[in-house]
Image (tube, rainbow, N blue to C red; front, side):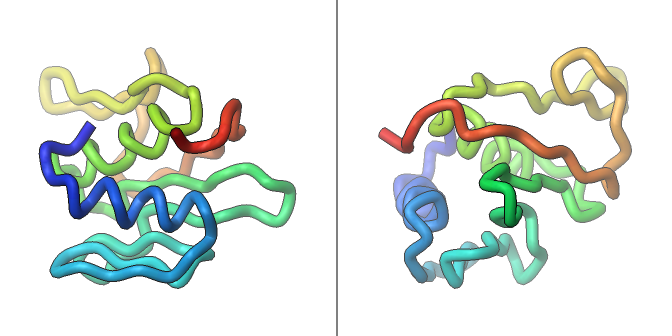
Length: 106
């Protein structure tokens, strides 16, 4: 989970579909932006679409893992030997990943 409580509060607002903003993060309730890049969005079928948006940074990864953690999906995003992974599958920094909301944000 991010060490930044402000980022976590914006992520919670995104999961609750409420608009919110802080210095680096914002959401209109439908899409979560980090430094202006859309890193997460609500899909029409109720799932979440997640992406590094080409920014392979620890800060982006922490936000994606916080979304996963708050929705009951653990913390599946990680980096190893300069590669990016979702669970054990290698992904690119431009790839999108879809997850189900397993539980409401707590």
